Image (cartoon, rainbow, N blue to C red; front, side, top):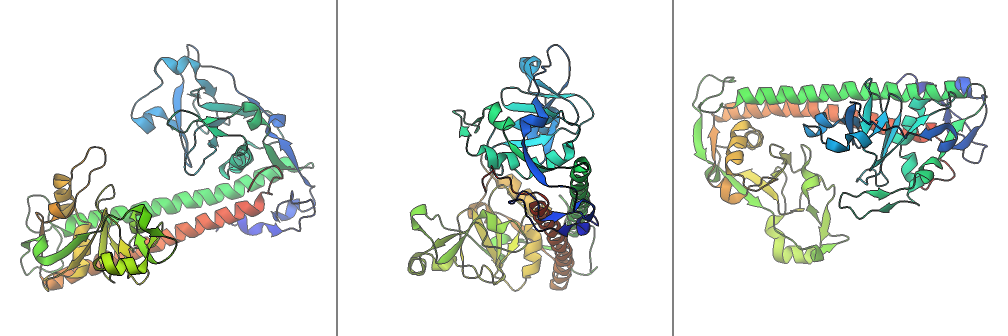
Length: 439
Protein backbone atom coordinates (compact mmCIF):
# COMPACT_ATOMS: atom_id res chain seq x y z
CA UNK A 1 0.00 0.00 0.00
CA UNK A 2 0.99 3.67 -0.28
CA UNK A 3 3.72 4.77 2.13
CA UNK A 4 1.96 8.12 2.46
CA UNK A 5 -1.29 6.35 3.31
CA UNK A 6 0.53 4.65 6.17
CA UNK A 7 1.80 8.00 7.49
CA UNK A 8 -1.60 9.34 8.46
CA UNK A 9 -2.66 9.08 12.08
CA UNK A 10 -5.97 9.04 13.84
CA UNK A 11 -7.21 12.27 15.32
CA UNK A 12 -9.98 12.78 17.81
CA UNK A 13 -12.64 14.96 16.24
CA UNK A 14 -13.57 17.92 18.44
CA UNK A 15 -15.11 20.08 15.72
CA UNK A 16 -18.56 18.52 15.50
CA UNK A 17 -17.53 16.07 12.81
CA UNK A 18 -15.81 18.56 10.52
CA UNK A 19 -12.28 17.44 11.32
CA UNK A 20 -11.40 14.16 9.56
CA UNK A 21 -10.63 11.00 11.51
CA UNK A 22 -7.19 10.81 9.92
CA UNK A 23 -4.65 13.61 9.49
CA UNK A 24 -1.01 13.56 8.52
CA UNK A 25 1.29 14.13 11.53
CA UNK A 26 2.69 17.42 10.24
CA UNK A 27 -0.83 18.90 10.11
CA UNK A 28 -2.02 17.67 13.48
CA UNK A 29 -1.95 21.17 14.95
CA UNK A 30 -2.33 23.07 11.68
CA UNK A 31 -5.83 24.31 12.42
CA UNK A 32 -9.45 23.29 12.26
CA UNK A 33 -11.53 22.43 9.23
CA UNK A 34 -14.33 24.62 7.93
CA UNK A 35 -17.02 24.36 5.29
CA UNK A 36 -17.07 26.78 2.40
CA UNK A 37 -19.62 26.90 -0.40
CA UNK A 38 -18.13 26.01 -3.77
CA UNK A 39 -19.09 29.42 -5.12
CA UNK A 40 -16.82 31.12 -2.58
CA UNK A 41 -13.66 29.79 -4.23
CA UNK A 42 -14.85 28.82 -7.73
CA UNK A 43 -16.77 30.47 -10.55
CA UNK A 44 -18.87 29.15 -13.41
CA UNK A 45 -17.34 29.00 -16.88
CA UNK A 46 -19.34 30.88 -19.51
CA UNK A 47 -16.78 31.06 -22.34
CA UNK A 48 -18.14 29.50 -25.57
CA UNK A 49 -16.21 28.00 -28.46
CA UNK A 50 -17.64 30.33 -31.07
CA UNK A 51 -15.70 30.03 -34.32
CA UNK A 52 -12.64 28.36 -32.80
CA UNK A 53 -11.66 24.70 -33.09
CA UNK A 54 -11.28 22.89 -29.78
CA UNK A 55 -11.54 19.18 -28.91
CA UNK A 56 -15.16 18.14 -28.26
CA UNK A 57 -15.26 16.05 -25.09
CA UNK A 58 -17.62 13.52 -23.58
CA UNK A 59 -17.72 12.04 -20.09
CA UNK A 60 -17.68 8.49 -18.78
CA UNK A 61 -18.72 8.05 -15.15
CA UNK A 62 -15.84 6.85 -13.01
CA UNK A 63 -13.35 7.42 -15.82
CA UNK A 64 -13.42 11.10 -16.72
CA UNK A 65 -13.42 13.31 -19.79
CA UNK A 66 -12.36 11.81 -23.12
CA UNK A 67 -12.65 13.06 -26.68
CA UNK A 68 -15.88 12.31 -28.52
CA UNK A 69 -13.73 10.67 -31.19
CA UNK A 70 -12.35 8.23 -28.62
CA UNK A 71 -15.71 7.44 -27.03
CA UNK A 72 -17.99 7.34 -30.08
CA UNK A 73 -15.53 6.77 -32.90
CA UNK A 74 -16.52 10.14 -34.37
CA UNK A 75 -17.23 13.74 -33.40
CA UNK A 76 -20.92 14.30 -32.66
CA UNK A 77 -20.79 18.03 -31.87
CA UNK A 78 -21.88 19.14 -35.36
CA UNK A 79 -23.24 22.66 -35.66
CA UNK A 80 -23.64 22.91 -31.89
CA UNK A 81 -19.88 23.06 -31.36
CA UNK A 82 -19.94 26.89 -31.34
CA UNK A 83 -22.17 26.78 -28.21
CA UNK A 84 -19.94 24.35 -26.29
CA UNK A 85 -18.32 25.54 -23.05
CA UNK A 86 -14.52 25.85 -23.14
CA UNK A 87 -12.47 23.69 -20.77
CA UNK A 88 -8.81 24.11 -19.93
CA UNK A 89 -6.58 21.89 -17.85
CA UNK A 90 -7.67 22.03 -14.20
CA UNK A 91 -11.24 23.15 -14.96
CA UNK A 92 -14.18 21.07 -13.78
CA UNK A 93 -17.16 19.70 -15.68
CA UNK A 94 -20.38 18.51 -14.06
CA UNK A 95 -22.57 16.31 -16.25
CA UNK A 96 -26.27 16.78 -15.49
CA UNK A 97 -27.22 13.20 -16.34
CA UNK A 98 -28.16 10.42 -13.94
CA UNK A 99 -26.20 7.17 -14.05
CA UNK A 100 -26.38 4.05 -11.89
CA UNK A 101 -23.22 4.91 -9.96
CA UNK A 102 -23.86 8.67 -9.91
CA UNK A 103 -27.64 9.27 -9.79
CA UNK A 104 -27.07 13.00 -9.20
CA UNK A 105 -24.58 13.30 -12.06
CA UNK A 106 -20.83 12.93 -12.39
CA UNK A 107 -18.28 15.72 -11.88
CA UNK A 108 -14.59 15.59 -12.73
CA UNK A 109 -11.52 17.74 -13.37
CA UNK A 110 -10.26 18.03 -16.93
CA UNK A 111 -6.65 16.85 -17.07
CA UNK A 112 -5.90 17.15 -20.79
CA UNK A 113 -3.20 19.48 -22.05
CA UNK A 114 -5.18 20.64 -25.11
CA UNK A 115 -8.15 22.96 -24.83
CA UNK A 116 -11.41 21.00 -24.85
CA UNK A 117 -15.10 21.79 -24.81
CA UNK A 118 -18.40 20.23 -23.66
CA UNK A 119 -22.04 20.87 -24.58
CA UNK A 120 -23.60 23.60 -22.46
CA UNK A 121 -26.98 21.87 -22.64
CA UNK A 122 -25.95 19.08 -20.27
CA UNK A 123 -22.85 20.43 -18.50
CA UNK A 124 -22.12 23.04 -15.88
CA UNK A 125 -18.42 23.91 -15.75
CA UNK A 126 -16.40 25.83 -13.19
CA UNK A 127 -12.85 26.91 -12.36
CA UNK A 128 -11.20 27.18 -8.96
CA UNK A 129 -10.25 30.85 -8.54
CA UNK A 130 -8.71 30.75 -5.06
CA UNK A 131 -5.00 29.86 -4.99
CA UNK A 132 -5.35 28.45 -1.48
CA UNK A 133 -7.59 25.62 -2.76
CA UNK A 134 -5.92 22.69 -4.56
CA UNK A 135 -7.69 21.55 -7.71
CA UNK A 136 -6.61 17.94 -7.19
CA UNK A 137 -8.10 17.93 -3.69
CA UNK A 138 -11.46 19.14 -5.02
CA UNK A 139 -11.29 16.48 -7.72
CA UNK A 140 -10.99 13.71 -5.12
CA UNK A 141 -13.85 15.20 -3.11
CA UNK A 142 -16.03 15.07 -6.23
CA UNK A 143 -14.91 11.53 -7.04
CA UNK A 144 -16.22 10.61 -3.58
CA UNK A 145 -19.60 12.00 -4.77
CA UNK A 146 -19.60 14.99 -2.41
CA UNK A 147 -21.74 16.89 -4.91
CA UNK A 148 -24.18 14.02 -5.33
CA UNK A 149 -24.94 13.77 -1.62
CA UNK A 150 -25.59 17.50 -1.57
CA UNK A 151 -27.60 17.78 -4.80
CA UNK A 152 -29.83 14.79 -4.01
CA UNK A 153 -32.22 17.16 -2.23
CA UNK A 154 -32.51 19.45 -5.25
CA UNK A 155 -32.31 17.29 -8.37
CA UNK A 156 -35.24 15.95 -10.35
CA UNK A 157 -35.15 13.75 -13.45
CA UNK A 158 -35.98 15.63 -16.64
CA UNK A 159 -38.38 14.57 -19.34
CA UNK A 160 -35.68 13.28 -21.66
CA UNK A 161 -35.21 9.52 -21.79
CA UNK A 162 -31.47 9.75 -21.13
CA UNK A 163 -31.95 10.64 -17.46
CA UNK A 164 -31.09 14.33 -17.72
CA UNK A 165 -31.24 16.18 -14.42
CA UNK A 166 -32.84 19.52 -13.66
CA UNK A 167 -30.07 21.13 -11.61
CA UNK A 168 -29.88 24.81 -10.78
CA UNK A 169 -26.31 26.08 -11.09
CA UNK A 170 -26.80 28.07 -7.88
CA UNK A 171 -27.48 24.84 -6.00
CA UNK A 172 -24.21 23.46 -7.35
CA UNK A 173 -22.32 26.59 -6.24
CA UNK A 174 -23.89 26.26 -2.78
CA UNK A 175 -22.20 22.85 -2.34
CA UNK A 176 -20.53 22.88 1.11
CA UNK A 177 -16.92 21.76 0.75
CA UNK A 178 -14.86 20.80 3.82
CA UNK A 179 -11.45 22.48 3.81
CA UNK A 180 -8.58 22.75 6.31
CA UNK A 181 -7.84 26.20 7.66
CA UNK A 182 -4.59 27.81 8.77
CA UNK A 183 -1.35 28.75 6.97
CA UNK A 184 -0.71 25.16 5.80
CA UNK A 185 -4.20 24.58 4.37
CA UNK A 186 -3.06 24.27 0.74
CA UNK A 187 -0.20 21.95 1.72
CA UNK A 188 -2.60 19.67 3.63
CA UNK A 189 -5.02 19.51 0.71
CA UNK A 190 -2.19 18.69 -1.66
CA UNK A 191 -0.82 16.04 0.70
CA UNK A 192 -4.22 14.31 0.76
CA UNK A 193 -4.45 14.45 -3.04
CA UNK A 194 -0.89 13.14 -3.46
CA UNK A 195 -1.63 10.24 -1.10
CA UNK A 196 -4.72 9.23 -3.08
CA UNK A 197 -2.90 9.80 -6.36
CA UNK A 198 -0.22 7.30 -5.31
CA UNK A 199 -2.96 4.74 -4.72
CA UNK A 200 -4.43 5.51 -8.14
CA UNK A 201 -1.02 4.87 -9.70
CA UNK A 202 -0.84 1.54 -7.88
CA UNK A 203 -4.37 0.66 -9.05
CA UNK A 204 -3.42 1.51 -12.63
CA UNK A 205 -0.30 -0.67 -12.47
CA UNK A 206 -2.19 -3.59 -10.94
CA UNK A 207 -4.98 -3.21 -13.51
CA UNK A 208 -2.41 -3.38 -16.31
CA UNK A 209 -0.96 -6.51 -14.70
CA UNK A 210 -4.42 -8.10 -14.61
CA UNK A 211 -4.96 -7.26 -18.29
CA UNK A 212 -1.57 -8.78 -19.16
CA UNK A 213 -2.44 -12.01 -17.31
CA UNK A 214 -5.73 -12.26 -19.17
CA UNK A 215 -4.00 -11.61 -22.49
CA UNK A 216 -1.47 -14.32 -21.66
CA UNK A 217 -4.23 -16.83 -20.97
CA UNK A 218 -6.05 -15.84 -24.16
CA UNK A 219 -2.89 -16.29 -26.23
CA UNK A 220 -2.20 -19.62 -24.57
CA UNK A 221 -5.70 -20.89 -25.33
CA UNK A 222 -5.32 -19.93 -28.97
CA UNK A 223 -2.42 -22.36 -29.14
CA UNK A 224 -3.94 -25.12 -27.00
CA UNK A 225 -7.01 -25.49 -29.26
CA UNK A 226 -7.13 -26.05 -33.02
CA UNK A 227 -7.20 -22.88 -35.12
CA UNK A 228 -9.90 -22.41 -37.75
CA UNK A 229 -9.52 -25.01 -40.49
CA UNK A 230 -7.08 -27.14 -38.46
CA UNK A 231 -7.65 -30.42 -36.63
CA UNK A 232 -4.89 -30.21 -34.02
CA UNK A 233 -3.51 -27.30 -31.99
CA UNK A 234 -0.12 -25.65 -32.48
CA UNK A 235 0.89 -26.41 -28.90
CA UNK A 236 0.46 -29.89 -27.43
CA UNK A 237 1.41 -31.42 -24.09
CA UNK A 238 1.49 -34.91 -25.61
CA UNK A 239 2.60 -35.87 -29.10
CA UNK A 240 0.62 -39.09 -29.27
CA UNK A 241 -3.11 -39.46 -29.90
CA UNK A 242 -5.61 -37.82 -32.21
CA UNK A 243 -8.08 -35.03 -31.59
CA UNK A 244 -11.49 -36.53 -32.38
CA UNK A 245 -14.45 -34.33 -33.37
CA UNK A 246 -17.63 -35.26 -31.50
CA UNK A 247 -21.16 -33.92 -31.46
CA UNK A 248 -21.42 -31.73 -28.34
CA UNK A 249 -24.74 -33.26 -27.16
CA UNK A 250 -23.23 -36.73 -27.46
CA UNK A 251 -20.65 -36.05 -24.78
CA UNK A 252 -22.05 -33.16 -22.72
CA UNK A 253 -25.34 -32.46 -20.96
CA UNK A 254 -26.61 -28.86 -21.23
CA UNK A 255 -29.76 -27.15 -20.05
CA UNK A 256 -31.06 -23.58 -20.09
CA UNK A 257 -32.58 -22.17 -16.92
CA UNK A 258 -36.36 -21.72 -16.63
CA UNK A 259 -38.24 -18.51 -17.24
CA UNK A 260 -39.64 -17.50 -13.85
CA UNK A 261 -42.04 -14.60 -13.32
CA UNK A 262 -41.21 -11.83 -10.84
CA UNK A 263 -44.39 -12.68 -8.94
CA UNK A 264 -42.64 -15.89 -7.83
CA UNK A 265 -39.72 -14.03 -6.22
CA UNK A 266 -39.50 -14.16 -2.43
CA UNK A 267 -37.42 -12.45 0.26
CA UNK A 268 -35.84 -15.77 1.23
CA UNK A 269 -35.74 -19.39 0.13
CA UNK A 270 -33.86 -21.08 -2.72
CA UNK A 271 -31.46 -18.66 -4.49
CA UNK A 272 -32.12 -17.89 -8.15
CA UNK A 273 -28.76 -17.23 -9.83
CA UNK A 274 -28.82 -14.26 -12.25
CA UNK A 275 -26.37 -13.00 -14.87
CA UNK A 276 -24.41 -11.03 -12.23
CA UNK A 277 -23.66 -14.34 -10.51
CA UNK A 278 -21.61 -15.67 -13.43
CA UNK A 279 -19.19 -12.76 -13.82
CA UNK A 280 -16.19 -14.63 -12.37
CA UNK A 281 -14.59 -18.05 -12.37
CA UNK A 282 -17.04 -19.33 -9.72
CA UNK A 283 -20.82 -18.93 -9.60
CA UNK A 284 -21.90 -16.51 -6.85
CA UNK A 285 -25.22 -15.35 -5.42
CA UNK A 286 -24.57 -11.72 -6.34
CA UNK A 287 -27.81 -10.03 -7.41
CA UNK A 288 -29.84 -13.22 -6.90
CA UNK A 289 -33.55 -13.46 -6.18
CA UNK A 290 -35.17 -16.14 -4.03
CA UNK A 291 -37.86 -18.74 -4.66
CA UNK A 292 -40.27 -20.56 -2.37
CA UNK A 293 -38.78 -23.93 -1.43
CA UNK A 294 -42.01 -25.89 -1.87
CA UNK A 295 -42.60 -24.37 -5.30
CA UNK A 296 -39.04 -25.24 -6.32
CA UNK A 297 -39.65 -28.84 -5.27
CA UNK A 298 -42.82 -28.94 -7.36
CA UNK A 299 -41.71 -27.09 -10.49
CA UNK A 300 -37.97 -26.46 -10.72
CA UNK A 301 -36.17 -29.21 -8.78
CA UNK A 302 -34.46 -30.43 -11.98
CA UNK A 303 -32.90 -26.97 -12.44
CA UNK A 304 -30.97 -26.99 -9.15
CA UNK A 305 -27.23 -26.58 -9.60
CA UNK A 306 -24.76 -29.22 -8.48
CA UNK A 307 -21.08 -28.83 -7.54
CA UNK A 308 -18.75 -28.78 -10.57
CA UNK A 309 -21.58 -27.76 -12.96
CA UNK A 310 -20.41 -25.18 -15.49
CA UNK A 311 -22.58 -22.12 -16.16
CA UNK A 312 -22.39 -19.64 -19.05
CA UNK A 313 -24.55 -16.79 -20.28
CA UNK A 314 -26.42 -17.12 -23.56
CA UNK A 315 -25.82 -13.46 -24.49
CA UNK A 316 -23.45 -10.52 -24.13
CA UNK A 317 -20.70 -12.31 -22.16
CA UNK A 318 -19.60 -15.13 -24.46
CA UNK A 319 -16.44 -16.89 -23.30
CA UNK A 320 -16.97 -16.47 -19.56
CA UNK A 321 -17.42 -19.81 -17.78
CA UNK A 322 -18.24 -20.09 -14.08
CA UNK A 323 -17.97 -23.24 -11.97
CA UNK A 324 -20.53 -24.13 -9.32
CA UNK A 325 -19.00 -24.49 -5.86
CA UNK A 326 -20.65 -25.08 -2.48
CA UNK A 327 -21.67 -21.39 -2.45
CA UNK A 328 -24.25 -21.85 -5.22
CA UNK A 329 -24.93 -25.60 -4.97
CA UNK A 330 -28.68 -26.20 -4.76
CA UNK A 331 -29.58 -22.85 -6.32
CA UNK A 332 -31.79 -22.58 -9.40
CA UNK A 333 -30.30 -20.83 -12.43
CA UNK A 334 -32.37 -18.32 -14.40
CA UNK A 335 -33.30 -18.21 -18.06
CA UNK A 336 -30.47 -16.79 -20.15
CA UNK A 337 -27.98 -19.05 -18.36
CA UNK A 338 -26.99 -22.55 -19.48
CA UNK A 339 -25.37 -25.20 -17.34
CA UNK A 340 -23.09 -27.94 -18.66
CA UNK A 341 -21.57 -31.14 -17.36
CA UNK A 342 -19.92 -34.12 -19.10
CA UNK A 343 -22.10 -37.19 -19.57
CA UNK A 344 -19.51 -39.33 -21.35
CA UNK A 345 -16.41 -40.79 -19.74
CA UNK A 346 -14.33 -39.58 -22.69
CA UNK A 347 -14.84 -35.94 -21.65
CA UNK A 348 -13.03 -34.39 -18.65
CA UNK A 349 -14.96 -31.65 -16.83
CA UNK A 350 -11.93 -29.34 -16.68
CA UNK A 351 -11.39 -29.72 -20.42
CA UNK A 352 -15.08 -28.99 -21.07
CA UNK A 353 -14.70 -25.75 -19.10
CA UNK A 354 -11.65 -24.83 -21.16
CA UNK A 355 -13.49 -25.61 -24.41
CA UNK A 356 -16.45 -23.38 -23.44
CA UNK A 357 -14.02 -20.47 -23.11
CA UNK A 358 -12.10 -21.27 -26.30
CA UNK A 359 -12.12 -19.79 -29.80
CA UNK A 360 -13.47 -23.01 -31.43
CA UNK A 361 -16.58 -22.72 -29.25
CA UNK A 362 -16.79 -18.94 -29.73
CA UNK A 363 -16.67 -19.34 -33.53
CA UNK A 364 -19.59 -21.76 -33.44
CA UNK A 365 -21.55 -19.47 -31.12
CA UNK A 366 -20.89 -16.46 -33.35
CA UNK A 367 -22.14 -18.36 -36.39
CA UNK A 368 -25.28 -19.56 -34.61
CA UNK A 369 -26.17 -16.53 -32.44
CA UNK A 370 -29.19 -14.49 -33.41
CA UNK A 371 -30.53 -11.08 -32.45
CA UNK A 372 -30.12 -7.44 -33.31
CA UNK A 373 -28.03 -5.49 -30.79
CA UNK A 374 -27.17 -8.25 -28.33
CA UNK A 375 -26.59 -11.68 -29.85
CA UNK A 376 -27.84 -14.76 -28.01
CA UNK A 377 -27.97 -18.52 -28.47
CA UNK A 378 -29.60 -21.49 -26.78
CA UNK A 379 -29.80 -25.29 -26.52
CA UNK A 380 -31.17 -25.58 -30.06
CA UNK A 381 -27.92 -24.10 -31.40
CA UNK A 382 -25.77 -26.16 -29.03
CA UNK A 383 -27.26 -29.36 -30.42
CA UNK A 384 -25.63 -28.52 -33.76
CA UNK A 385 -22.15 -27.87 -32.35
CA UNK A 386 -19.00 -29.99 -32.20
CA UNK A 387 -16.21 -30.41 -29.69
CA UNK A 388 -12.74 -31.78 -30.55
CA UNK A 389 -11.59 -34.20 -27.87
CA UNK A 390 -7.92 -35.12 -27.36
CA UNK A 391 -6.80 -38.13 -25.32
CA UNK A 392 -7.86 -37.98 -21.66
CA UNK A 393 -4.31 -37.44 -20.41
CA UNK A 394 -3.96 -34.38 -22.65
CA UNK A 395 -7.38 -33.06 -21.59
CA UNK A 396 -6.27 -33.22 -17.97
CA UNK A 397 -3.00 -31.38 -18.71
CA UNK A 398 -4.85 -28.63 -20.62
CA UNK A 399 -7.32 -28.25 -17.75
CA UNK A 400 -4.52 -28.12 -15.17
CA UNK A 401 -2.59 -25.52 -17.14
CA UNK A 402 -5.57 -23.20 -17.60
CA UNK A 403 -6.73 -23.69 -14.00
CA UNK A 404 -3.29 -22.49 -12.90
CA UNK A 405 -3.76 -19.40 -15.07
CA UNK A 406 -7.19 -18.81 -13.51
CA UNK A 407 -5.73 -19.10 -10.02
CA UNK A 408 -3.15 -16.41 -10.77
CA UNK A 409 -5.81 -14.17 -12.35
CA UNK A 410 -8.14 -14.65 -9.38
CA UNK A 411 -5.33 -13.74 -6.96
CA UNK A 412 -4.62 -10.58 -8.95
CA UNK A 413 -8.31 -9.65 -8.94
CA UNK A 414 -8.44 -10.10 -5.16
CA UNK A 415 -5.37 -7.90 -4.78
CA UNK A 416 -6.96 -5.21 -6.94
CA UNK A 417 -10.23 -5.41 -4.98
CA UNK A 418 -8.29 -5.03 -1.74
CA UNK A 419 -6.55 -1.88 -2.99
CA UNK A 420 -9.88 -0.39 -4.11
CA UNK A 421 -11.37 -1.17 -0.69
CA UNK A 422 -8.35 0.37 1.04
CA UNK A 423 -8.66 3.54 -1.01
CA UNK A 424 -12.39 3.80 -0.33
CA UNK A 425 -11.88 3.37 3.40
CA UNK A 426 -9.02 5.83 3.42
CA UNK A 427 -11.09 8.50 1.65
CA UNK A 428 -13.84 8.12 4.23
CA UNK A 429 -11.33 8.93 6.95
CA UNK A 430 -9.31 11.61 5.16
CA UNK A 431 -12.45 13.59 4.29
CA UNK A 432 -14.83 14.79 7.02
CA UNK A 433 -18.55 14.36 6.50
CA UNK A 434 -20.00 17.75 5.46
CA UNK A 435 -22.82 18.87 7.71
CA UNK A 436 -25.01 19.84 4.74
CA UNK A 437 -24.68 16.58 2.82
CA UNK A 438 -26.92 13.56 3.11
CA UNK A 439 -25.55 10.09 3.75
